[in-house]
Image (tube, rainbow, N blue to C red; front, side):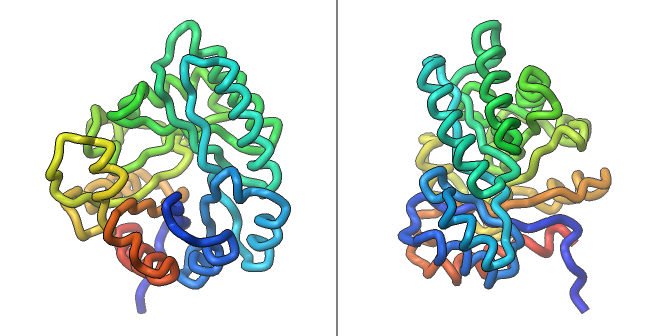
Length: 257
């Protein structure tokens, strides 16, 4: 008998899917996921009703991008905080075009406070393509935002392609991890990181990442949080979303047992 995963499994949607909230939630529930991410535009009273009817929760709102335009960042933070409150989302995925400094630190803290007031936390996503490039720098941002208001989002694509190290994964405090976004990647064919990350990810186990070691590193430390599958792939976008979700669950679950 196959054992259940030791973590909670969730689905992060591809913004390019042609699917409404009801279709997305039905696909996630049918595949066995317990949570699903929602774009800000879909996180409203109607979306909350769809989630409740399916017995799913929203683990992430997509997304806030922190830039050097303070007013635009705060305005966006207010919108996504409202969306998070509408569907009782646990986290707001937050990316960074700027690094942590004397100017951005207070701005990040303000955004985290807005999310906290809405009942959500700031999921700090590091990326080699942004202003926050590793687990270590993401932890610094969590401290600036307030550890009770933020956590590190560890995306495997960003981990394997960025400045993070195995040592950082082995040492990041477990209570500083918001959740994991799980994906594999095809061998790169271009130096264009945006094209690679947005169109050439792969289902877990069908690419080049050492996902066995990645998952084992966290499981062996006793981590049992949430893993959300995020596979952005131009070819796989042609699949029906229900089939995509089923494949995403099946390819992911074995890594976390």
